Length: 333
Ligand SMILES: [Zn+2]
Ligand SMILES: [Zn+2]
Image (tube, rainbow, N blue to C red):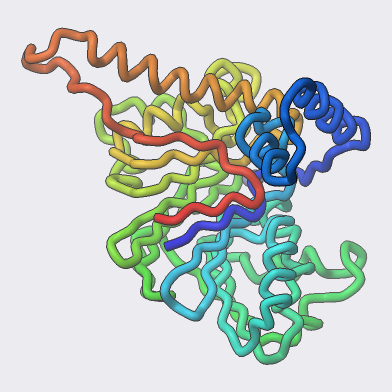
């Protein structure tokens, strides 16, 4: 299973201003002073391996879309935020036709569906598009965003064969040589998380979900949903203090909650997702460093409790890795 992050920003697409791009170039040139950078290879190595990520690159600004490459020829896509536009362009460029696309929608907030009218394969009559979701009004909502006066052409302009399938939590779907299940999440209007198990690997796509105090209780069903996964994509635009302060009830979670749930669910890789549109790349890098520092500190704290005492916590093994996903990141499970 290969997971391609096409859009990782939450709420609204963001882009870099001219000044922000200039600053990256100035910072890179300042960092290059006095370095031996004569060949192209030396320069590429310097950019990729020596510069901080916020200078050499960046998180990008497309809203949620993740493409999951499975052994099947059918395509499995999670959400249709603006990140689905470049994904559609890639499929078209690769000449992909006569193909079924399964698009699972977490919920109908605009940032998760706004890219769909720009998904090129939907205009190819040889393709089939199947929208999956847990909201009863999935079809009418997806059609509504393309109706006059919101968009110049309506959804009937899609030449592909389009259908809609509504599922319930607890359903187990067999498609794309994978088993897919749903989990209902706390969010304004509710959202659905998806678990995908395929050929012995597993991943969870859990965006737009607020985990409140109940998450600390001994029995919290989300832990069973994520248990043992190789990858947990987790909605965490907030710090802990924001999540219990000014942004409580906004429907999202913190990086700290992500680490705690991943640890209890024994998840291998935690991928922080749905980044705050107000965060600059520099701020994102600081946020990532704090998330990793929290994991390290929690490991040490647990190790330092008296080992061997009945009831004492065992050392924290999970998550084994944390990454702050960015547009264009691909990981193999
Ligand atoms: Zn969102
Ligand atoms: Zn939302």
